[in-house]
Length: 353
Image (cartoon, rainbow, N blue to C red; front, side, top):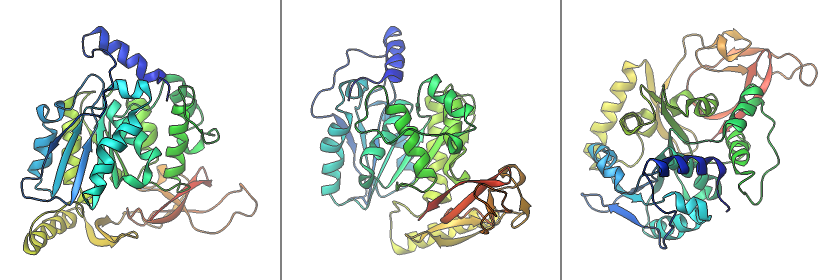
């Protein structure tokens, strides 16, 4: 794939301040493995660096320590997927050949992909192209496009109201940003399949205007906000919040049956303190803390009227595009197909299985 315009600007800035050298992309893609200290692991975490960082940054900045502190049954693979791989169009092929394919041959139950900034973009970009390879995505303060694309989506009233172009095949420097947003719209509205996408960024992050557009379309439980700007301290706090969340409670757990029982008990106690109930959800029946909203079932015309979402009550409008009745969402269980109501009219929907 030819060079990426928006990322190229970031690379030029980084080079001026001495953060990056030549745009090399050696083969194979170098990575550092941090093997599970307790033996064979159930999961793999693949980490993609931000602009100007290398594979070693994840240990230096505490990501490896944070993952280990949660006693997961997980290996960690910190990659050296620097900007040169994106520039030369080899990022997808090298990550697949040198990291993901070998991981699949080792029989991991789940492969998670995560990274900050450019690495957040890369996590989404790889998942877009190789959806079946990935079990879940944590995009931390991801780069999501140039100002003109972001302003175009904002002017449309957000991602759900934006009119996307036709699917791009192949992607190139001129269409990749809109293609990524087209895919994100299709995924969040249930028109295309994808693994769960989780997002986090600091409230003062320079990329917040773009990231907030994606945040608006994700379930609240898939978003992890923190104080801070575009830097590693905020990014580590986001990782910790994600690993501590009920959303991740059923994944990559280690230990004996008694250990698992104790951990489930702890998770249930946290859930109860939130006013929720632990129950299996979605097709995979993953345990999740489901919290009922105080305004469940109340009449609404827009999301702003509800704690959760304003959803169609199921009755078809008298005429296409006409007014519909909305009811506030019952709880934060994300599963099933639900149609949003905004300004008294159907505003698209999403299916989560």
